[in-house]
Image 1 (cartoon, rainbow, N blue to C red):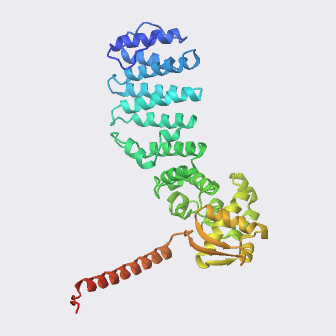
Image 2: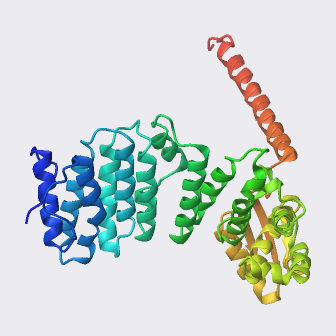
Image 3: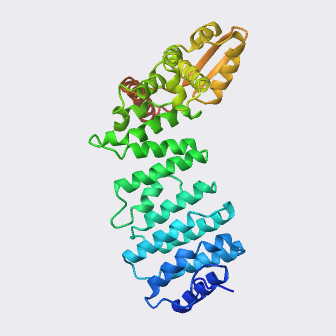
Length: 385
């Protein structure tokens, strides 16, 4: 049996087609329309629409069925009942039992999301389900590109999503991005989440702040973390072991971490961090800090400060260069490394002052060049004899 989708047919006829098709694939539904009207028809159709997931229907047929439901949904007058129908529909699509059907459901959700008027608040719930489904099938990047784009998309609703709703969505996004191995974007989302809390409610973000710190420490591509210390929920954790550990990764050297680990081995294990990975990260951070004051370092110095064996020094330098946090040249004959540039491990008042001084110096030099050029241009031309 065919199911009409977005065709110019009578809605009542389309409802009858939907009921008949669902009955055919094994759903417990009557083929007769409800005497209570269109909304009750949709309520009953949506209630059993997931029967097609376990039927012998092809993916094309499943998508046609779900799209047909969308085409009926969008003609129902907007109201509380409409929102409850859309929520129920989203709940069904979130339970797609396979990746292939998940892809079908994601396409249908995307269709529904863009078919609904932009000022409807229920679009938030559709987007939330899109994140759920895309995460389950490994296609989160098809839904989420950046926090800025997401806010622009959702803030067209009147009223826009509440702070609590955005916190819930950002929490889901963080978990989904982590599960799909997009750690860099996950960190940005978590920072966005923590930024939604104020001084008054920062204590409520305790779990989120913990999760943010642990994710940043565990991420093998995240090295610079001083910005986390400025977040209000993270400040609220001052005095706790997790905050002490973050402070070590922000500003201390390898011996500081080793001392912390020796005193709190069970804590490191309990939060799921790998000690060896922590040591590797702290070695690089210590190297960066050393490079701030020493552009030339001997292998012996690196062995002592970074607790490396003689055979591991060259390998460490090569790995450090791969991160692009440090630019350096290694001289194996002299057993030295010459640093040409490096990122700042922390960027505070001293670094801003240094940047100001550098830019001021450039400005003065450019001014002198300009004056010299003007002097040349305005100089009188002496005719050749």
